[in-house]
Length: 138
Image (spheres, rainbow, N blue to C red):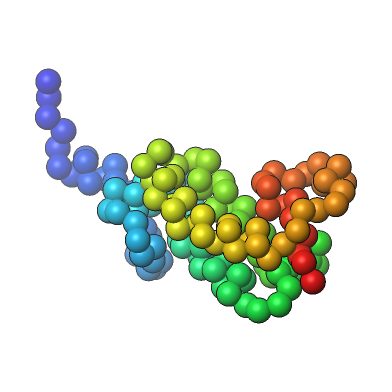
C-alpha cells in the first residue's frame, strides 16, 4: 500500500484561517479539540462552540431572570448559545460529545434549577431542544 505524503496529511487537517485566533476550551482533551476543530472547519464557523459555551456560562452567571426565547434580540437570548451547543453535541463523535457534555451538564443543571416548565408546550412546535420548553422563574 502506498504511503501518504506528509504534506498531503497536513493539508487534510483542519486549520484555522491565519486571521482567526483559535480559542481552546479548557477541560477538553486534544482529541476532542481536534474533533471540534474539524466540525467548525466543516461549517466555517470558527470558535463557535467556544463562544457559545462562554455565552451560556455568562448568561447563567448573571443574577436575576434568564432571558427567555421570546427575547426581541437573538444575540441576547441565552437559549441561542444552548442551540449551538446542542447542535454540536448531536454532530460530534462519541468521545468529543461526552467531553463537551461534561462541561455543558452543570450549566444545564443551573438552567433547570432557575427555570420552570413552560406551561403551554403546544404553542412552541418549533422547539428543538428541551431548553426551549423552560420559562424564567421570576
